[in-house]
Amino acid sequence: MYRYDVFVSYKREDSNKRLVTPWLREVLDRIKYWLRQEMGGKKVYFFFDEESIEVGDNWPEMIRDALLSAKCLLPVWSPEYFQSTWCVSEWKSFLTREKLISSTKQKSCQLIVPIKFHDGSWFPAEAQRVQQLDLSPYTATTQAFWASQRADELDQRIKRFAPNLARV
Image (cartoon, rainbow, N blue to C red):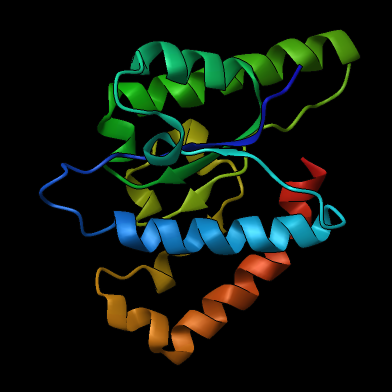
């Protein structure tokens, strides 16, 4: 039934102005590693558009299918995220799924595990009420960050986060 363990939802950057995407790829690699450890070494499958959509694919259809076949949503929340129609509709689709599952099981269902990239004061009230993995102190736009002590701190934070993501 599920093809992906995690659907990564983020505000995509223009291909000629990539500052955040390299950081995000590094973070996702670490999340995949620690999640795999939490899952007993089992391979984990992420839908990340840059790795999952090939040249010639109908990308809106690929995204729709991936949303329907992913166990959970890992949104990377930033002020720009909530300005994107695509990002908000990905988030809302999982909110709807949570409500549907909760209504049939008569208990709360969690399918959205957000990462805070930057400044949550600009997030909609509905998003502000949700506990987020706050990585804003570790966001960087330079490759030099990954050779710093802060990168080690980030890795440990992701390691502590992995059990929560595995549970979802």
